Image 1 (spheres, rainbow, N blue to C red):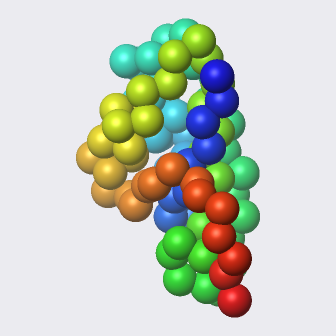
Image 2 (tube, one colour; image 1 turned 45 degrees about the vertical axis):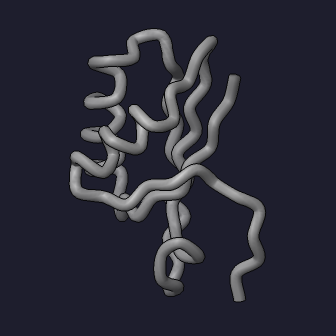
Image 3 (cartoon, helix red, strand yellow; image 1 turned 60 degrees about the vertical axis):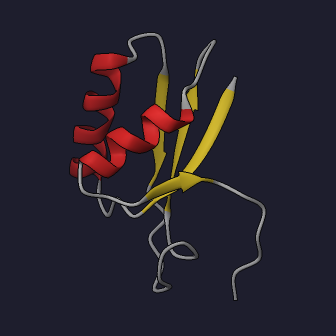
Length: 81
């Protein structure tokens, strides 16, 4: 299963910290960030967090990212202008 989230994590250092925190509780998951910063506000300006594993608990991942001080939501199909 693959789940994709959008976040406002601004850089690799903070993405690495959040990844480590996710992996402490979810050792079987693969975590990947795409740090695609834009000048637009969240959610149109965002970074991508991809989670891959047998089971991805979206609510738990969102709680971990938000507990780290960042915004996070499941990526939905939308057009940003």
